[in-house]
Amino acid sequence: MLRILVIIFVIFALSRAFLRFRDKSISFRELLFWFVIWTITIVLIFEPDISNYAAKFLGMGRGADTIFFLAIVFLFYSTFRLYVKLDKLDRDITDLAIKTSKELHREQK
Amino acid sequence: MENHEGKVFIVIPAFNEAQVIGGVINEIKNAGYQNIIVVDDGSADKTAQIAKNAGAEVLNQIINRGQGAALRAGIEYLRENKNPDIVVTFDADGQHQVEDIGKLIKPVLEDECDIALGSRFMDQKTNVPMLRKLILKAGILFTNLLSNIKLTDTHNGLRALGKKAIHSIDISQRGMEHASEIIDQIKKNKLRYKEVPVTIAYTEYSKMKGQGSGNFFKLGTKIILKKLIK
Image (cartoon, rainbow over all chains, first blue to last red; front, side, top):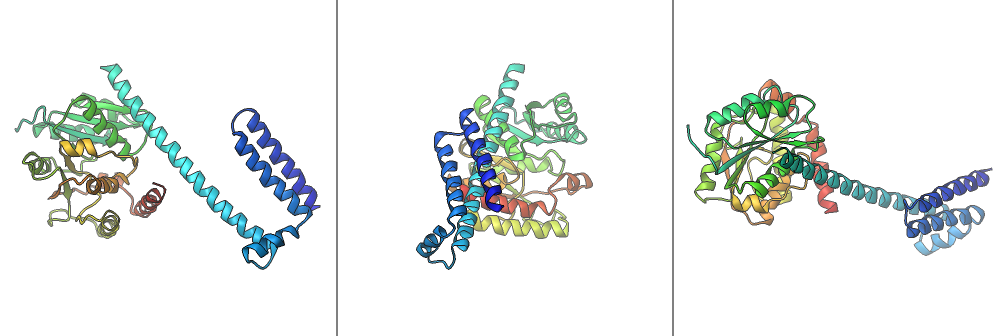
């Protein structure tokens, strides 16, 4: 049952990524990134033993722990990237507001 | 009444200060400073209109971006259009004293320093509420550690910038963290600085308008995060 739910979710997520690529909201590289992530998810759902190789390689006990560990690292990194992007967006809005206020002032004079 | 026409510009960032801004501008004008730029930071009340009627030049931020952004807008505008000798940053909530402007610009005019910073802790004239004092002192310690400059007051909005400071300080932090950023830039740009004792009037209004004590912790986190991603 869990496998079916995960597969349905992966198909949904992939279709979203593809649609966003089609309307040019994400680049081909980003589409490829999500494709790889979701493909790994599908593979691990059907062949969970593969994670044990990764566990061995990283020197960890169980495959499931390794996936959990990598997921947390990935989430931390994603949060950091989001923070950086939001900060950039925030700065852009400030730049725009200041530029607009100066231009409006010039026009009103 | 002294006349500082053409030399000194007073920048006042203001957000919803309709209640007091007119009085603050009048006091400054009566002290002889005629060049007043109010940056209305997206106020919902009549701050801009009242400031204009009181005789200030008003820059309108279309949305609220914070005190740092408002100061940046004012300083940039002056730099690009008025060629000022001195820019004084002054709070809109009435907690700064007009008499202190003269004390701040004096060392800049006499080329003792590139920037004069107001300090409420250099004498005993300011009656700082206990909790505020504790938090401010922690903030001072924190900023001094991060910026490696020893100051007695780091979050005081009353300053006088000379030409070198006007042209070298670029405020990129839009909120209250700009105060720490200015200190960082003093160090980075090797500006000569001097602290000058000033008096802060803690009125019920200014306490209500000012930073809540809890905000200082948020501010500290913000400063560290921004330093990390720089």
